[in-house]
Length: 332
Ligand code: KG4
Ligand code: ZN
Picture 1 (tube, rainbow, N blue to C red):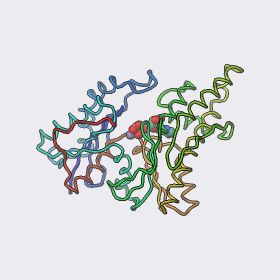
Picture 2 (cartoon, helix red, strand yellow; picture 1 turned 90 degrees about the horizontal axis):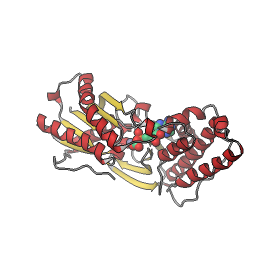
Picture 3 (cartoon, helix red, strand yellow; picture 1 turned 60 degrees about the vertical axis):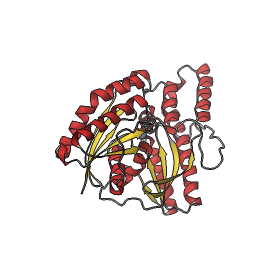
Picture 4 (cartoon, rainbow, N blue to C red; picture 1 turned 180 degrees about the horizontal axis):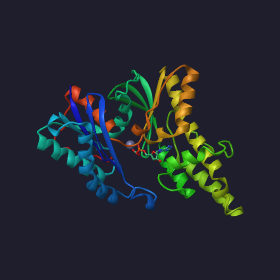
């Protein structure tokens, strides 16, 4: 039996979690509102907010878990990728906390953590190897072939923007607010997904490209706004539904292809964009069609959280893979 304290601070969420083996005891997340007014994460403000949040968040996670500090067996932390200033706060805190307790450190890769969130014990079936995971966040878009917990073959990835970034930029073009993902998801529910068509680029293999979709969306709106300055306001829901369908369709078409080609019958999604309702329902529909199993994370494990860092840390703990206190964070 092991108790792991996990810390995540790679972007704009400060989070701490406690796990007993693969069971989650607590998962506290402080989201930073300060970035909304700027329409994107401001790195300097993010690290400042992490500094303010980290102690109450860790304290909250320990209290909520009902454990004492002394019971912690190891401290897991996100080492990267992420924003340097943000990572620094979590990494330094984890190091000093572990040292004060005399416990080992475990470094965790943020992307692996997103994928491994599927292995947190929720009393439900977990993926079996090999399986395909579509990892979609604000910073990454990858099709991964999982061969074991830490063997992830990157079959394809974006050559420019990430899927979440594309969605956020589309929202920004329409002046909907930040982060745009959840707003577009909500507005799309009232719109017609076939109202407008946006071409997806021809990229070979399992790779993606999103910058062209964003540009064609921008030019499309520019032309319409010349004729009608209220075009966006009037057709907001249809625009959201159409751009969401374009992006989700593109994402899943390649992921489905990858599963067929690799004769894999299980597909998972992970990362912030996996909170998207269309992506979730379409993944389920595709898997049902092929008689595959779909793994869709609960909402709280989609966007950045320390629970996923904790489960990744737990698997490393089992292998005895501990980190040296001198390890610096990495941004990519
Ligand atoms: O994984 P995450 O929290 O942070 C990164 O590691 O990037 O992902 C954040 C991204 C943002 O782009 C956000 O707009 C997107 O996830 N997102 C969504 C939804 N909820 C969050 N995108 C589409 N639909 C959603 N419901
Ligand atoms: Zn993330």
